[in-house]
Image (cartoon, rainbow, N blue to C red; front, side):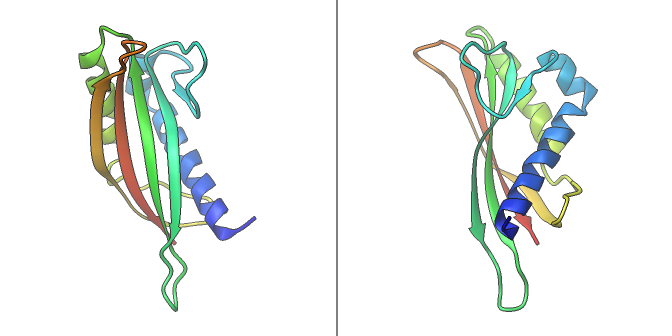
Length: 136
């Protein structure tokens, strides 16, 4: 297993653990509300761990990686406010968080962009939260 894969997987595991371990967020979502993919008939609301892009950020002396992670908050058609409240809670849990990673060190984890919209086909609300993480 390469270093890139190890740090990325460890980051995803730590993010999932932080979200799933927060009683307030779990109460907002209900049991099983955090997924690594959007299920065919999802029980909403849900937080879905979406796209992850990893880039080499190494210098001549230090190995490092930059990760761009997207989390998706999904709610039923009437739930714009609910989606934004869940997104705010998710951001509060992860923005500038000090997460312990297995096999890597998290240097920073910061929210870079939040986008909210109604999905026209399903009429569900989607809030995408993008984070930038740096690991060594």
